[in-house]
Length: 434
Image (tube, rainbow, N blue to C red):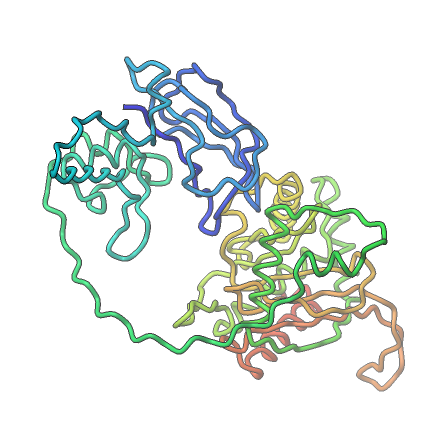
């Protein structure tokens, strides 16, 4: 039986993607695990592996097609012994069978109901069970409960081999929950002007219309939601960097032979990671009906790329050396700019850093990226007159930072304690590494 290959969900938030490139053509033989296409999501370009074996009978979606919905058919795979004509029948309704003309005064017999294809299975918890189309068909024929079968395919997907050896068992019925009370509809948020309305405002003026790609659509949706639903508050501090700049210069001289050059951003990452350990209650994320307090310091760092930004995550940053953090950050930033990050590279973290100091920005307010509890907006270091501990006025290099905080997770005093720890780490960098 011919098998439909469906657009895969390559990340938890993916709803559609671009079929960037086919690596096979019609007539090619593929095996389970073969890379057959490159799929471009809103975050990266990723490889799509076959989970069944067969011959590519028909390619349904051409290279470069944008907006292909997850689970939409993109190609047809033929099993052994099938010819190309089988690909034309996949998903098609069966041809009607000619019937005798009804006799006079006799009502025509009702048409037989079409048998629907097996739907994508869903576990009792409500999560979708990932299984190949062929595995779903075999399971339906054998009366198997897919939620009780462990998948051996990529990312735990259930494939043909998993269901062929499984024994039939009655499917456990999940009791139906009582219908929830219908809440009064919330007042709709005022919508902005439509595209046509905006275009009319600029009739007679020259402009270029730029189509939104997946990344820009996702950024717009997520940050609009974040700004509207997260109760932000902001904490600001100035940080004197002279001790850090001197210490950084000394370290870079010692590390020159190893090809390592530490940036101020590397110290900021380390300072934030250590502060999250010093104020563990602030090392948390919002999880809808609860708060998850994290053990490790997983710090996300915003990286600007053409058309948007990524926030790759440096995991266990509190236990890594400055040189290790520097090397990892350079690698993540390079892969972000090439759109080669995998989902595990940018998912997770409890706190983020956005540094616009290298662009000469003195200070700014960043938007919290859910489910993080906060983000540190870092400005540039500038020479300023400051009053020293002895009352003398001196010139110091001062960097302004603003911490945006999710008030659902971190209250004002706790946020102030966290920011104080970050400042102390940066103003006393030797102690930070002790």
